[in-house]
Length: 200
Image 1 (cartoon, rainbow, N blue to C red):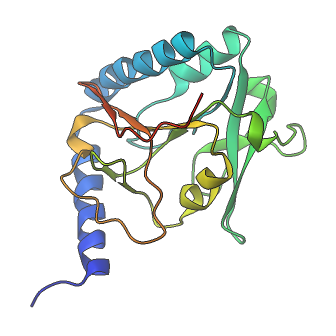
Image 2 (cartoon, rainbow, N blue to C red; image 1 turned 60 degrees about the horizontal axis):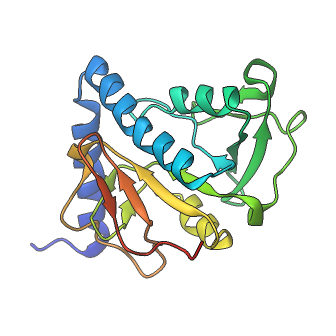
């Protein structure tokens, strides 16, 4: 029996997660550094100042090196706060890694809202986006909460870059009507541009 669209996405999500999890930790770390170098080059080339980065967990592309670079470079470092009841994402500024971070119920770190202030959305220059599967048109399959699909359109001036291992690139991410395509995807092998960049 042919699977429906929802079943196909569920299958693709599971397959992509397994492929990502199967990459040896040492290899993931090495590839993550190559991916982050692309992002740093983009930041330096374009003079980006305010960067929203996801704080990696499990087998995601590791963003700790980018986090350290941004803090040490005097950039405006932002990380998302996820509201699991409202399904919203709010960027908060981090200035001190030890003081400003707490552990989210999902397992990743996030800004301590008692210590970190929300940041104006229209001042964000770059947003890094996690996911499980990405296609070359910029569509992605995330974890199913739709946080980024709701958040990204609120920042039309920012560039949205997905961070992925090449193994996560798929021919078709089976987008739904509400899915928002990214501007670029950075992998350890290439930088994929979807030609959707906002005017700068």
